[in-house]
Image (tube, rainbow, N blue to C red; front, side, top):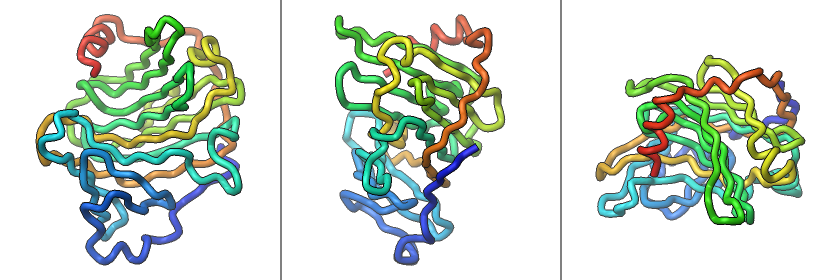
Length: 232
């Protein structure tokens, strides 16, 4: 399914045996990440534990990378990129932005009590139209794997664990196919000081192979309304 894949070449510097904590940036899985509202520890098995900083008030800690390395170029020049990440628990998501008007955004994870994915953009009237896919309710602290791929025409494919694939033409319809897929956040969504999340792996590459688009969108009506009300 994937023509090119970037995987960390070993554990960086043996991860200093017990990891790296409290730095402004951290190298993990071949990427240098900025730390936002948190501290990070690389574990001996190569996973990374992110801890939210007390007193931030934001309810979010993040690993952030702007413009993933892509040979001589960057992800915003690649038309068929994909990312896959895995994590423990039910308080994590990934957010991918363009950081340029009209502001396309893709988000997926286990948050607000659901396994879900969201595509949205900032419209000229500054509203934020969006489309949700909800796979299931999710409140158990178990392992998850999330995949997001962008088609060359701008549509997005997503899969949560081994659940059904979902295809969204929302961004293709509203902003076209040239939006960037380069500004990436792995996030812990929690208002509890010193709360943690462990990210097991992060991979990315080009050559996303589109899935057949379903006839329906498979949204959950009342549950979706509850998710929207709880969105922050």
